[in-house]
Image 1: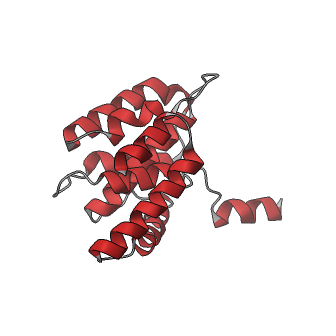
Image 2: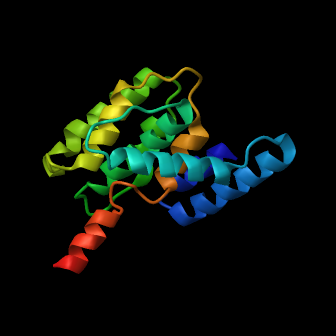
Length: 170
């Protein structure tokens, strides 16, 4: 099922990949038990959202946050592409990586490729990239969480409460 999801991402079928990912999580939960992926993702998302909006760069607490953040960064870098045909196959080296060293190397390549479009005062990106760069995961690569972070709406692009208040006050 993971290969099917990767294939959909590679071919640009993001909505289909999201549905397949949800089905995969439901089936894994039904047959294997354990934590509900929706609960895990909600907790990880909320935690990362708070962290990227802080003034001082905090630290990632666990592997789940780390791999979700890797997916978020990958999605953000690909969104910066000015190519006419943005393909999700750019995410393949990260999604298919079997070691953290490879993930960090690919993220550095994407940073070098798209850093000309990232404002230096982008606190959210700076915090997220710094947290990912400095964290060393303990377990094996969790492809499910990388894909979840990649498919989830990007936290860097979200409007924060401060942004909304500024618009109202202007």
